[in-house]
Image 1 (cartoon, one colour):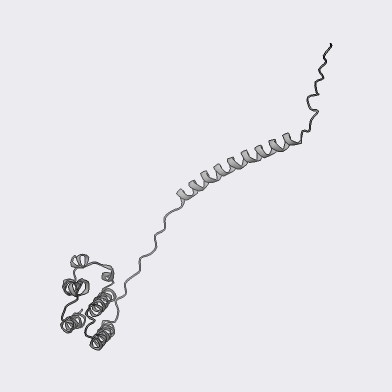
Image 2 (cartoon, one colour; image 1 turned 45 degrees about the vertical axis):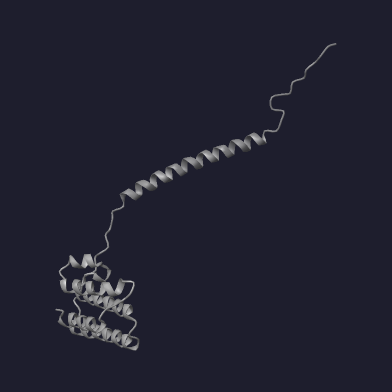
Amino acid sequence: MPTTVNFRRLFDFSQLPIIITAAFLAALTVGIILMFLYNLLKDVQKKEKPVVEAPKPVFVKPDLARLKAEYMEKINKIEIKYNEDTTKIRPAYEGMSKVVREFVYKATGTEVDKFTLAEISRTEYKGLAKLIGEYYQPEFDQISEGDVKASLEKTRRLVAEWN
């Protein structure tokens, strides 16, 4: 019994799937190469840009008499609020600490409103450091105890005597 085998011609099937696959792979290769070049050039451009520092704000000395009057009024408000309810010792000390720190910041330009007591102690403002140190115990203890009236007077004295 004779057996015959018929071979198909080489390109007897559709060439469209091969063309589409080849085009897709070529586009993918070009895309990857372009992404690599883009990232490479982007990094080079970043390194070449000069760093521009923002200008530091210039401190302008305020009218000290007006500033003192403004902060004396704030201290008076703390006293009025305390006199309404004398059990609120902690808010009175927190208020005094905030007010005196803001005053020194606005009077000198030194950001003591953001300093800890240790940082304030290392500055030239020893009177402020001593006063803030007196505030710490009533301000941060579990049970606030302190002589608010005496502390208010010391705060007023610091503001009034500031040069």
